[in-house]
Each structure stands twice: as structure tokens, then as C-alpha cells.
Length: 132
Image 1 (spheres, helix red, strand yellow):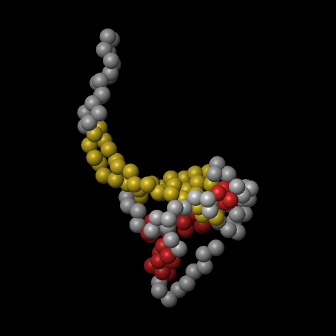
Image 2 (cartoon, rainbow, N blue to C red):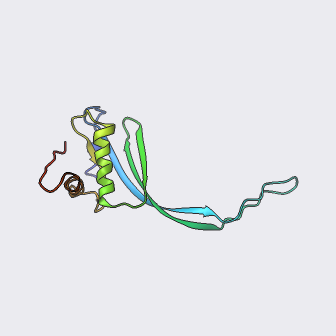
Image 3 (cartoon, rainbow, N blue to C red):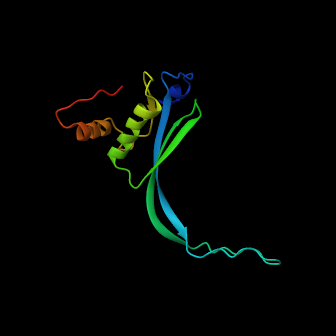
């Protein structure tokens, strides 16, 4: 934790943004019963029984100093989804910056191999790419 604190203390620099990344798995639930609305002399009635509707993954990208954030929802969280999110960050959201400083945890999908594996899959084994 102490290693990342100096990064957060850097001044805002549009050519070298600090972007925080995280992801979370969430359960999707639905209501089983329809709520009964309030009536004169009677409070509303709500049945809190839920039905499981599956799961999804939330990829969060934010730039605290700029006040920007984005959430991308996917069905799962494989390496290639995370790497494609990084590619979108570079190509769409910050295409003109010199360097993007990424702040993220040490989840196994968050390593340098993920973007390279996606690039190899997209470009073919004999091609190379440069990550800025």
C-alpha cells in the first residue's frame, strides 16, 4: 500500500494521467413477489425473497484527479476482457497521452502478460506490438 501513495500525490498532468483499475464479481438478483403498494391506513408490503439471476463482472476505470470514471459490465472476467479494457483505455479514452500510470491490485489477470496474450491472439504469433 505504501508503494502507491507517492503516485496518488503526483500533481494532475494531462499527458501522464493516473488511472486506477479494479474489478468485482456481482450477483444478479430479481424479486420473486411483486410489492403491494401502500393504501390508506396500511403500509406498503415488500417481500424480500430474491431469485438468483446469475453473475456479472464489473471493470472499473477511474482517473481521480480528473474526476472521470467508467464501469464496463461483462459476463465473466478472463484475462482477455481485462486486456481489451486496457486497449480501449489507450485507444479511445487517452489516445494522445505520453504515458498512462496504472494503479491496480495484484489479481492474476492484472499482469503484463495479459495484454501481450491478447495482442498475440489478435495479431498472430509472428507479429509484435508496442505498448506505450
